Structure formats: C-alpha cells, structure tokens
Length: 322
Length: 174
Ligand SMILES: Cc1cc2nc3c(=O)[nH]c(=O)nc-3n(C[C@H](O)[C@H](O)[C@H](O)COP(=O)(O)OP(=O)(O)OC[C@H]3O[C@@H](n4cnc5c(N)ncnc54)[C@H](O)[C@@H]3O)c2cc1C
Ligand code: SF4
Ligand code: FES
Ligand code: FES
Image (cartoon, rainbow over all chains, first blue to last red; front, side):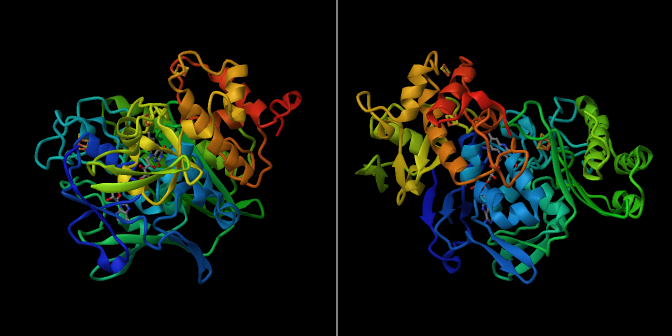
C-alpha cells in the first residue's frame, strides 16, 4: 500500500475536496492493498451524521453511512421495500455487511480480475492502455451496454434493488443535487475510468426511496457458490397483480452491465397481461435483443433469460419450477 | 501517528503508520496473535473481531479508524481457564482441525448470535419477519463469511447450535 495522509472529517463543511473518501473501507482498502488505487490523502467520513433512516414525504431517506446490515434489518425496509432487504442480504458476508455503507456500496468498483492485476492492460485503471479482458477470461463480464474499451460489470446487489425501486441519490458539494439512480452509474463508452456522475469534491449524503408501491418483491441472485460470492446475474423484481393480470412490473438486472440494467420495453410488454410462459419468453427476448457475449460469458445470455422467467413465475404466483 | 485503542477492556497507546490495519496492529504492535491473517482481503473471515459488539474483518479496517470503539478479540472472549460458551462447545464438538480459522469462527459466531437475538433476517430466512430458527441452513448462511480450509463445517455448526441452545430434535424446522 502506498503512503497517504489520514484525515477525519467532523462535518460536511470541513470535507477537503482533494482527499479520497473512506467509509467502510471494504472496497477501497482492498484496492489500495493491490495499489490499484493510491490516494495521497484519505478522509474518514464515519463520524459524520449520515447514519439515519428517516421518513421523508411518503418515502424514506437513507443516510450514506447506514451500514448494509442495519439497512437490511430495518423494520420499514423489511415491510415496505423487501426487495432491498433481500438484495442486501444476498451480498458479501455478515462481517462485510456490518462495515459496508450505503454510499460506499454504490461507489464500489468492478470485480474484473484484470482491473485488479496491475500487470494487465486495463483502460479503466490506465486510460488508453487497452483491455485485457477482451479475448481473455470473461466469466464475470458484461453482456449489455459494454464497449470495445471496457466490458466490466458493476458488481453490487443493493443498487439493483434500488434501481427497481426508482431511488434517487442525494449529493452534496459545491452545488448540491439529486440524481436518479438510473443516471448515476455510467456505461463505459470510450471513458471506462468515469464510472458515475459524481464529481471530485462531491459526496453522496444518502439515497431517497419514493413511496412504497406494494406488490410482490423478489431478488434472485445466481452465483458460483451458495453464499459470499458476487452475482453472475441477478434480478430485482417488484410486480403488482390485479384481477389475475400484471398491473405493473419494475425489473432491474445485476451482473450484466456497468450499471444496474433496466429496460422499459420489457416492463411495457408485461403490463396489463395475464402471466404465461409465452409472455415471459417474449419479455426475455426483448431484454436480450441488444445482448452481446464476449467469449466465455456467452452462458450469461441463457442464464439471464431463465432467471427472468423464473423470477416472473415466482412473483406472479405461477407454479414454481426448479 | 499516535492512536489509542480500547481493547478487551484495556486502553493502549500506539505509534503506527496510517496504513496499519487493525489486524496488523493487534498482531504486530500488541502481540495478540489469536486473530489470524488468512487472505488479508476480506475473503476468508480469519481476522474477524468484534467492534462495539459487531463482527467485522480487521484486515479491511484501518487501526486509526477504530480509535473510539470498543474492540474485542478472541483473547477478550475467554481464557483457557474461563472459556466462553462458544469456545467450550468448539472443544466439545471438535469444531476445528488445524485451528487456524477458529478464532475468527468464534468471534464471528459470537456476533452472529447477537444478530439473531436482535431479530435480523438472513438470506436463508423464509420470511424477513422471522422467527429465525437456529437451523443448519440459517447458521451455514450466516457464517458464510468464515471459510475453513479443513472443512470442519459440520462440527462448527453443531458447536454453534449447542452453544445457542438450539433443540436438536427440530433440526431444520422453520
Ligand atoms: C470478499 C468480498 C465479497 C463481497 N461480496 C459482495 C456481494 O456479493 N455483493 C455486493 O453488492 N458487494 C459485495 N462486496 C462489496 C462490498 O459490498 C463493498 O465493498 C462495500 O459495499 C463498499 O462500501 P464501503 O462503505 O466499505 O466503501 P469504501 O471501501 O469505504 O469506499 C468505496 C468507494 O466509495 C467511495 N465512497 C464511500 N462513501 C462515499 C460517499 N458517501 N460519497 C462518495 N463516495 C464515497 C470511496 O471513496 C471509495 O472509492 C464484497 C466485498 C468483499 C471484500
Ligand atoms: S473490462 Fe474494463 S476493467 Fe476489465 S480489463 Fe477491460 S478495461 Fe479494465
Ligand atoms: S484475513 Fe481478513 S478476511 Fe481473510
Ligand atoms: S480448522 Fe483448519 S482452517 Fe478451519
């Protein structure tokens, strides 16, 4: 690990613009040990008053320092936004969830193995160097929204549920602003090193959830082992039913793109329809129309199709299929 | 830099490099080698300690960030002549082979049983509202952050269930 200066922020006002924020440290310290990140200064924000979950209008405001474990267990999240509890509980381990914060989780970086290995070419780590993943081992790489410059995925679970819930990210800085989670993470294009809209000198203060929408909440995560592993693909679903028909479906997908993926056309084809395998196959067809495999990760295309269909069968009360 | 750690009921003043993890501070600066280094990257759980009663990975914690907290390590949970209930049950059930993961397992299980007592659900819970059984599936999921290279898992789960007073006749109920 490279040397750095350690600073501790006592208030939002005294946040130094040039220092890298550290919260739970579970992603940043890992990357600093690999010297993939080497900040000159760290500012510890854990003393800031950003660790509350409060109601706001009809929704909920979650502070950036609320730990993943506390958020998953929060009674209002469990009751009104269970897809979020489920996504959090499917992530990392008990120890890591006790450390990981809401803000840090949104900002966690890809698990592309070439990004972690400084001997390999990586446009995200070293813009212009090339991408060793293309033509390499691509098991955890993207099938949607990738570019010839980078095929990495955003690896997190929490943000996938937040995407299905239409969450908004609250940002403080020279000009405080609110950004829908939909627009927060960026696709790589030719600047894979720019991963979010957050600018230097800005800080995430929290996330706002709109009023609860009810319905059936599911988070389905497929991974290489039963627990303590990142998603190969995941599906967050909030599905409403009325008179035997799907009244609305919010569907977000993890492990398949550089951001939590959502496709309004998929949701539109489901709305107002009676659940059936033919309908779900059509929805999967639409979702996967733009999909592109990069060698080994070809398996994610059928895996995502089956995961979507299984989630929809489950959420609409059709007989479960293994 | 000068830091003060509150550890196992005592206070220690240390002079550390800012880069020092809590794990290295415990082992190298304080000589408390019960806490183990497996991966140093959050992937194995061998370094698990309790901070303000919550289980965390000390390899991904900077010592300087743990200054105001109460830290408990395996040495603080019990001693050879005064074992904690979990320590005793790991002995009784052969909950280890080489023993390298064991301090992490016991610290983790200590925190995990508090989480169940506080009514926290897990990925294995059928309902988010509980009740949460001390079933094999629940404990395996809640302890998944602690790997055991010797694969003593069956005995580890048995030791934890016994220490928590789980009723063996209802192994996988609920
Ligand atoms: C072994 C392992 C397994 C894991 N498995 C999973 C998994 O299955 N699913 C999953 O979703 N995650 C998983 N994770 C990732 C984990 O969830 C993240 O590391 C964690 O959420 C990051 O939060 P943190 O508070 O520790 O962030 P930090 O490490 O403190 O920070 C991460 C980044 O966010 C920035 N940052 C932090 N807070 C703010 C803020 N308020 N405003 C602006 N920037 C900020 C930091 O500058 C840094 O760049 C795993 C991690 C490990 C080590
Ligand atoms: S996929 Fe992206 S992160 Fe991975 S090596 Fe290529 S440029 Fe780097
Ligand atoms: S040494 Fe900390 S998790 Fe492996
Ligand atoms: S007892 Fe050897 S690693 Fe667990």
